[in-house]
Image (cartoon, rainbow, N blue to C red; front, side):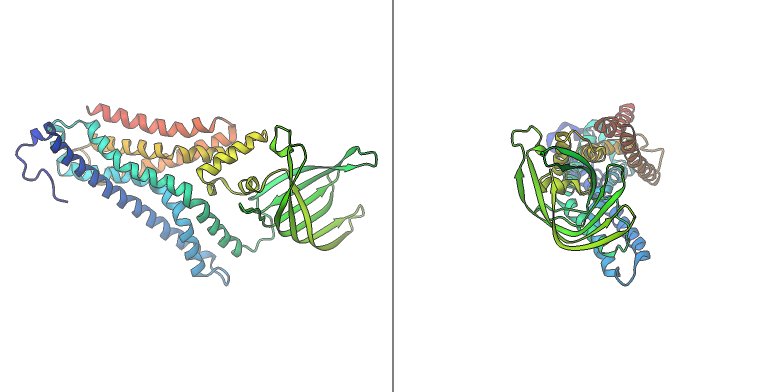
Length: 402
């Protein structure tokens, strides 16, 4: 890109006229925008290539190269969202570094343009990637991750039930002739997935007696929502107001008696009752990373109504909500790297340092998430710690150059 200062003999007057500042602003923003786009796309492309190569080890008669390509395609929005903060950091360093190598930043500062003004110019194109990350989280990731999961499910041949989906333990009661209810053990229930239309996937239910002994095991291929029955509409808890029912399909029931003899029965259908609406079951069966920001908020609200917490979903909620601040704080750090070493370090070294810092920031974000899960400490504060730390570090390094 042609330098604005190659034939200028009056650089000391650049900052005195609004028109000159407007041209400078546009020039710096364009350089930063092009560099950030190149960095984000470059990191994204590398991740796609390496992910596809790793999938080649899993190829078989069912999981072909075409299926692997489809899987990587559906996972690509997730990779793009993950590398946007590091790409913004790297791109800002490259964009400003190229200006510094041609002494254009020196001329700007000599002309009276403050460092804070230049940093503000660089932050403006970064807002584009803030909006991009939010849009991917809200509108793309829930559906794309689900499509990728379906490909993995088709390829999976494991007979062991995974820990994903929704697990719950439901107390069971037996009604006597006088109308009194006595405990009759409990049911361990597993639902693989659910959609917003009310359809549920694979269902498994194990009935344990009061001593914890297995009595029956039920497996159903899926189910369809049939409606709800009122229980106590005046109750404050939604789960105590209605009982929601699903019609299970292709059910197999295995009964075990006290002599450890088993008998198997096949039934075309059965009824499953839950205290949750279909929309809530949908939220409960999805991983935190597969939910949009609004869905994570709905999940958080629902869990609070039930008197429970899911720290995994809360951490994901705050990480997605505060992701714009992560991008902006990393751009501030990128600016401090360039202004702190205009003549003493090469652009290559700045790029390496920026890449290492971006990876370190990502690892610290993951670490504080695990710490919050392990200790129960406030997810919001734990997610904010690395963001505040990087912003303070960048601000301090920039202030040293004033």
